[in-house]
Figure 1 (cartoon, rainbow, N blue to C red):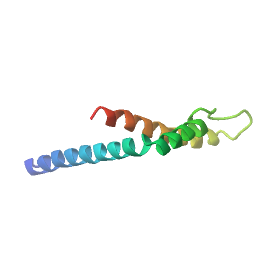
Figure 2: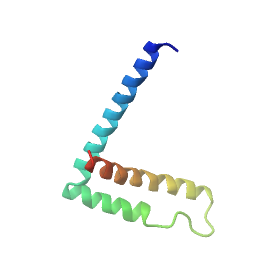
Figure 3: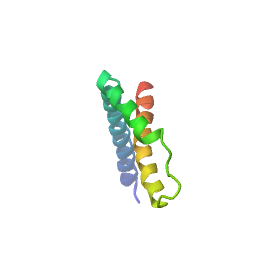
Figure 4: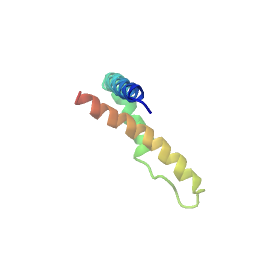
Length: 85
């Protein structure tokens, strides 16, 4: 690894940080509109505020359900992060 490689890495980190901030701001704009807030509430009710698994279901269902929950949680976390930018 050379100094040039390190400088390139730093630029990549800044670019990634800027891209993350841009997406966070986009999500904030979308989900804080009236329709977006209604959609987010529906997503929360359907995917977050429900049990991950029910007795007698295949255990792999819990992994799938947790993945759905994580998507909604990521949206909520991005909204909170964007409000601090």
